[in-house]
Image (cartoon, rainbow, N blue to C red; front, side, top):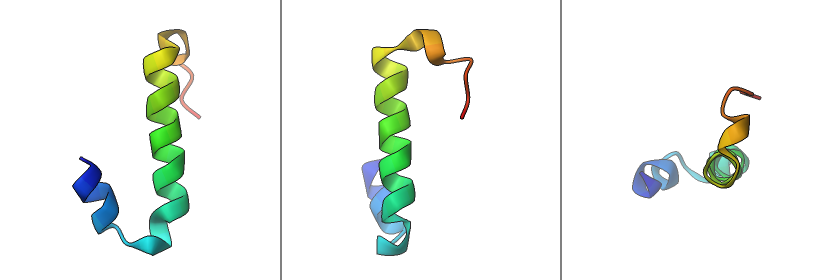
Length: 37
């Protein structure tokens, strides 16, 4: 999964951080799973 994200290129570095942050929030707070931002 991480390899695929890195494969997007540096242009998507911001998007990568957003996705990683979202995954972290989902793992630590499953109660926000229904709240797709």
